Amino acid sequence: MEMADAYPYIIVGNVGGGWKFAGQFLPWIRDKISGKKPDMRVICVEPAACPSLTKGPYAWDYGDAIGLAPILKMYMLGHRFVPPPVHAGGLRYHGMAPIICHLYKLGLVEAKAVHQIDAFEAGVRFARAEGIIPAPESCHNIKVAIDEALRCKEAGESRTILIALSGHGHFDLAAYDEYLSGRLQDYEYPEELVKKALADLPKMD
Ligand SMILES: Cc1ncc(COP(=O)(O)O)c(C=O)c1O
Figure 1 (cartoon, protein in one colour):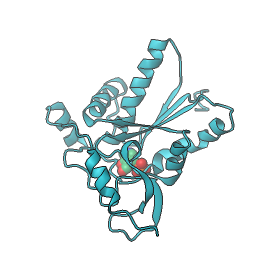
Figure 2 (cartoon, rainbow, N blue to C red):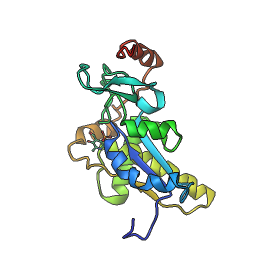
Figure 3 (cartoon, helix red, strand yellow):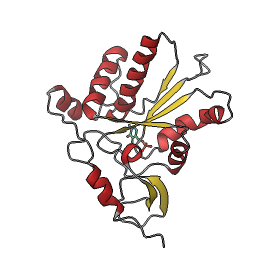
Figure 4 (tube, rainbow, N blue to C red):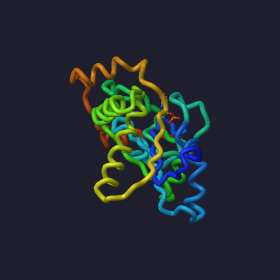
């Protein structure tokens, strides 16, 4: 950002477990907390198929699938969460980094869920414009960055949007092939499964 002589107005990143995006936005968030940049927005983007922040409860759960790791307070889908078989990309961890959950609870970061067909559509658009094939994970935040850029354009605002291109998609061409041949399907994680996961949480009393 310094090299570009810019300051981000919106920071958008994908979140699986959230560790990578936390590393990207945490250096900036103190300017929002201190009041230096109160309007700055931080947007976490997750798949609609694995929506821990946007659909999960904020509760204590194991960090691992078999229940041996220490418990953490997270927005989560339950440690027994298994991603649906139609989900093509990564971003499959059942919980979210506790520091992101805390900032989300305080309203300092936002969260959006994106369907995979929209994500791949944005990824192809990005590849055509930039000559880089983004990883499916990155396609999720590229989709939201495009939406935000179009919203700014409509409002006549010139804003700096900082995205995370967290990886290339050279090992994900099968998923791009599924998208381009119309075989990719969207999947909305059902509320019943969120409720069911609550029954498996570690007992706290
Ligand atoms: C390319 C890519 N981007 C983003 C992520 C998500 O990272 P995190 O789990 O730190 O949110 C992953 C995780 O596997 C990844 O492979």
